[in-house]
Length: 183
Length: 183
Image (cartoon, rainbow over all chains, first blue to last red; front, side):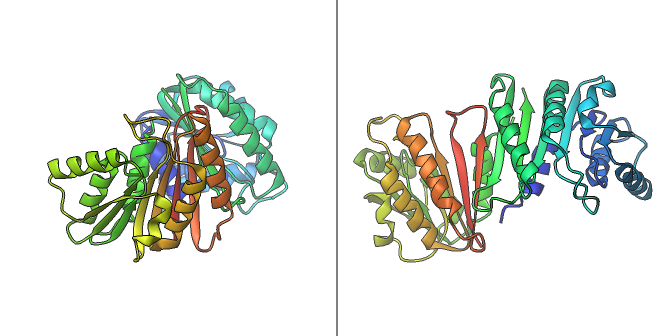
């Protein structure tokens, strides 16, 4: 059976360059931050965003305990302010929309800021860079986020961007993915 | 940049077993028939369908000239009659909907028979078998075919089948794919 999450990681990993700059737009518990830190290596840079101090704390602990290179910056701010912190082109970005696993489920990403963050991320992409965006339609805000993101992506210039959607059609509440590749 | 066609071939190839039975539901010029013939090997079986004698002729020539094993049966009939010919479970099936490349563009697959053929193919799937279905929405019948197929797949029991859609959202006329996996 296809494992969409694993498949998506494979797709994005082909875009990540050692020594490159990458962004974890939804830090959460830091598992993707750690994965990105290892992928870009000691000469790379990882910027990771979350609006909850708990997320920064558990991510810092995880990176420490795993002996990650000090190539990361953990930022307590909304991801839609990414351009205040990241000034260079990025080769990859990750979005895992929804709520912090194990945290307060009433605090979720919101479509207004998610859309702004995703647009900013796309603007920051270097040539051959890519963003992977996971949407969780199991809650109402997630469903709306997915629809608005698809609408926004549908309007992007095909000569500059290729936006592919991966979705299990007979499981409406399963997460689905967008892979957004810059030419 | 992601190459959906290549990606899809990789997905389906993990389901094809040497010595297994597979079906090319849309033979066309036989490139997929050849690929399937090689994938199942001399002890496997390939059934390939087309309603045009031209397709059978060019496929037969291709298989001969490439020295393919004689593990194939080329059938001049509509793919929705598959069960009249294939009596054993299949590990893989391929659909490339639309018209014969280089042939008469007024002769296309039709949603009525495509849906019947796809349903029959799903019923024939062995455990861990899969069908890959490419839809070409560049013409009106292709767009309708895609919508009806998605509707049909959406109703399949998630405990038995996983149906995943892959689509470039900012290129509405590009082909898109369904991977239908049996558990």
